[in-house]
Amino acid sequence: MAYQPKKRKLTAEINVVPYIDVMLVLLIIFMVTAPFVTQGVDVDLPGTVSAKTAAELSGDNNPSAPIIVEVSKDGELGLSVDNKDMVRGLTLNELLTRVRAEIELNPQSAVLVGGDRSARYAYIIETLDALNQAGVGSVGLMTEPLEN
Image (cartoon, rainbow, N blue to C red; front, side, top):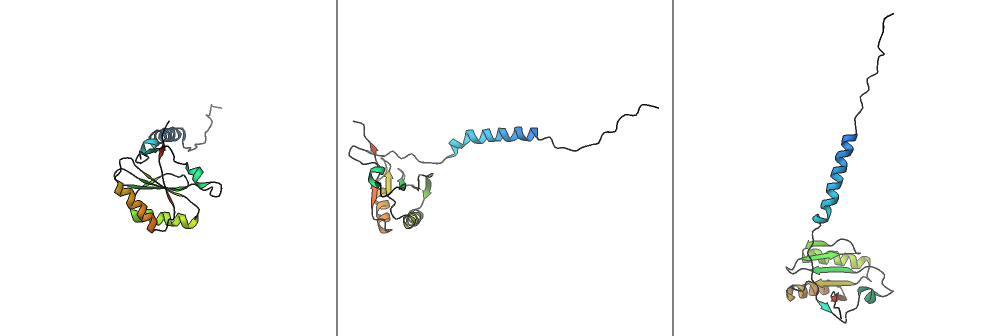
């Protein structure tokens, strides 16, 4: 009897190791670039000594996070609700629609306006006036505490 090699069964399998390597590299790239992608405008708030914190203003009867409206030095509007990311580049009508919706959901929410130190006074007054016309009863102005 002559030597007969064993017959092997051919199996077609996908080698997933290269795919895992590629996915890990992509994950690392996205993790490194994510902080640079966030769009935002830094608002340089004016300082004050006698201002109260948002927690002091809301007290125990209003545990919800405030609605924050930001006005950049160029007049660009931003909105943050429940301490979520700031939505920027809103028009005044879009801002008012969103603020009205949030006030209807939670009427006890405080509305705070933060205007950049170098913003034109007119931008902040227009925003305050529009919020007043939209039915927001009380609006606070955000400041940075001054160091003594």
